[in-house]
Image (cartoon, rainbow, N blue to C red; front, side):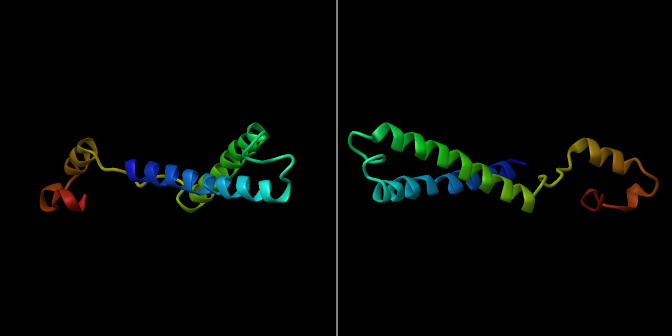
Length: 95
């Protein structure tokens, strides 16, 4: 579960990192509206929106690939498996 959440967060951050290139690119296309001088606030707003949108899209793409984390076996499920008939002949790793 922990590794799955880590990968989901990494997908979000990786997708959101494209906001930096988007902010630089838009300032090259429209320097009067978006720049890092007197128009810094609109540029930063654009970068935040791009970060969120691209991050969410990348996270959804990861969720499509790995929808749920792998099920973890806890001691309760091992105990339940060992109480089944013939459980004494199996090792806990085979349960």
